[in-house]
Image 1: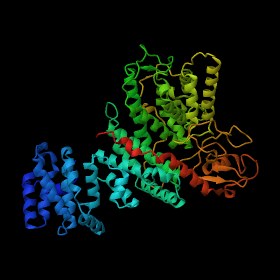
Image 2: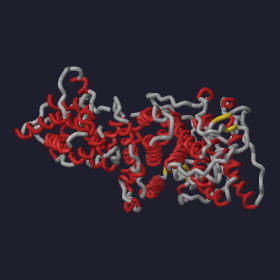
Image 3: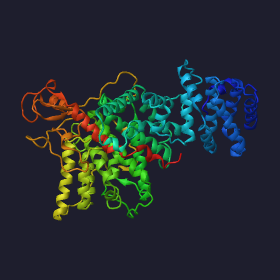
Image 4: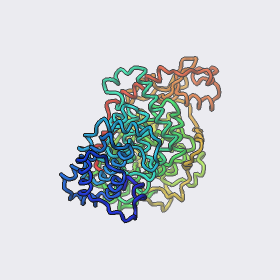
Length: 638
């Protein structure tokens, strides 16, 4: 992939003899000896010659001393105050072309360490000049070069240092590279996403010690930065562009998920989650934007999940067996062998994906329910070996159950539009039977862990107020009681259509899928209709009480109405605190009445609790500050 298309258009086919590395080094040597600046004509020849980096660098057989001398003299030209800013930009293009050759990167990295303040001043001056669309900005080419010579592992703190602490400029620079047309190489765009993830994470702005006692101004500044990122991401439809870059061909090719695709999908999901968690403006519309104006879920997340499940099936030697939907649980002969060689990113990817789906489908009404039509992967995961896989991955299955609550998959099909198109394995009856059998295969210790993880909502959202929550929560309690009392129950058989067969991890047949598709439009966002049929909390008198969870979330951070971890807390005249969206939904369905006192209550009566909102954000930051999500991806080589 060439970093420069303009040079080829200017010089292509003109019969001009392109200089070799040796000749280029000689040209620069003569200029250095004479104390002269390089001309545009000479640089343009080097640009076109270096576009074929392997040929220019003799497929790695170049004289290392000669190449080092060449790089040194290029840097000298970059540091010279006699060289015009546009010429320096073109010299960066020469270095960038050479950096496409992996073996040359260490030498280039060592050379650019000697770039001095004159070059930094030139970048600032060039940034004030009229933009040349064919040449691009010097700052962009410099950051691209840094990403390449660092093997696509530049972090947000390094980009921030490059931008001299200007977060807005740093983010816009990353997005300019990410959205470039024609696009840069996929690995470079992925590095941009991991850096964007860093800018949405507290560890870029707060140390662990600082997170223990964050001042209100610092907290507000951080929220404003995330709000800016949220607005830019929506306005520039960043996630749609990333989805298009990942889905084809990277998720369509045969075989396991490659490391670079894994990093791309994981970093983007974590980025979206962080932006939602920390944005104080338009956070709900940001979630709606993801499902309404991009195809991220349908074209990336779901195929990614299915490919990971296929990897699990292969590791258990289950991929050669067709699974009958209406047969008994796990009808495999011989039994699956223990899974010993499953990469850790498979489990990490599934947990992250399921939590992400829980976040974007939470109270998303018809959109969330439409996901039921492509929810075959839930059935696949429930049918994996209980002792060899389920019991060892409790957090994964807790996330799976939470996601199924949010799409209300166990609420039956009576009110589901076009229910006749629902695949057999996606019906409430099939899923409930498979869940029951999976749960009965666990011991009491595993069930207790699963119950606690199911109620934990630090990393996702859980709709306690839809029918499926009561069904799944009740099912877990029922099985735990049976295990405690030693009661045995005959295994339920999943109901399915006669003759329906599928392989683990297969994507549903798109011709039979009837769901709400992302519109991918550039016009003003049309909000998703949040028409969930909410059910009354279990307690009719007292505010909602949650079961014991693993997340150590203070009780005052949870909505009185349904126990959700609040994001935009409001307080009523009667002293109860609610999540604003939840109370709005309650009043819309139940009328202008307080859910606990029965007294009149309208949205105009409530007040925002800004102090509590800051407390919740501070708590989130403390939980995350000790982690560095970008560092998770350093082990991968692209």
